[in-house]
Image (cartoon, rainbow, N blue to C red; front, side, top):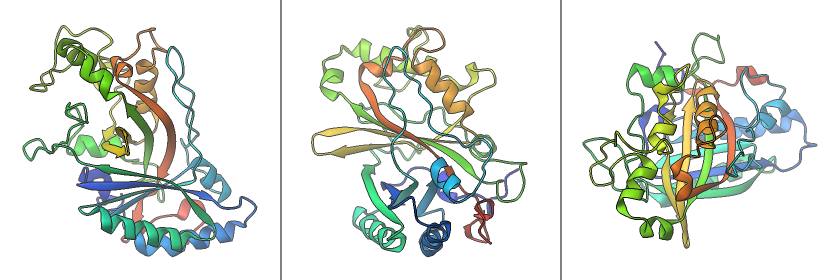
Length: 307
C-alpha cells in the first residue's frame, strides 16, 4: 500500500471549489541547468502538493538531466477526429482552493519565484459545478456528473501512483491534461435522448443506459473493459473564459497507459467508432506531465539531480 507521505496529497483529495491551471515555459532554453534548478528550489516553499500540485513536462525533465521511466511526449491520437498534439509548456501547476482571489496571489508568487528562468504562458480558471455532498462529485457544464466511475480507496492509490520502482519514483504520478471546449448551443439543441446516448447515462438521474449505442462515452471508456484494465483517477473541472467554456480534463495514473488506451478508443483508432462526446465537445490542446513524489513534506526531486 502507498505511503501517504510519498505522494502529492492534492491529487487524492478530489476537486476543490475553485482552481487555476497555470502553465510556465522556460524563458531561454540556453540557460544553465543550475538556473532551472535554482528556480524550482525557490518555489519549493510554495508547493506542498496540497494547495499546489506540480508537474514537469518531458522537455523540462530532459533539460534537468533527469530520466523518468514511462515519461514521454503527448502522442498523436488523431484518426477520424482531430486530437491536438501537445501544448507548449514545461511546468504545470494546479493551484487549488476556495477563493479565486487567493489563487491569483498564489499564481503571482509562483511567477515571481520562477522568474527569470520561467515565463508564465497560460492560465485557465476552473470551478466546481453543482457539487453533490452525497456523491462528492461535481458536474460538467452539460449537467452530467463527472467522475462517476472514479476508483476509490486503495484502488485509487493503485491507479494513480507509482509503486515498487524505488526511491524518488514511488509516490509519483503521471498526469494527462486536455482542455476541451464545449458547443453548448449544439448540446441544447440535441433531443434529450441524443444527449443521453452521447454520454451513455440519463442526464436526469445519472443512471447508465444499458442499450446505449457503442459510441456512448461510458462504453468507449469503461475502464474494466480494457485488457489490462485502464483505470485513471479523474480530477477534471469546468472552466469558462468570456463566451467560451468547457472541461479541463485531468487524469492521474501510475503510467500513461490507461489514458492512452481510453483516448485511442475514443478517437476511433481501435474499431472506427468515435466517442459520442465529440458531438458536443472538442479538445484544443493536451500535454503530459510527471508529478514528483513527496519526501518529508517537500517535493522529492532526487531523480532530477537535486539533493
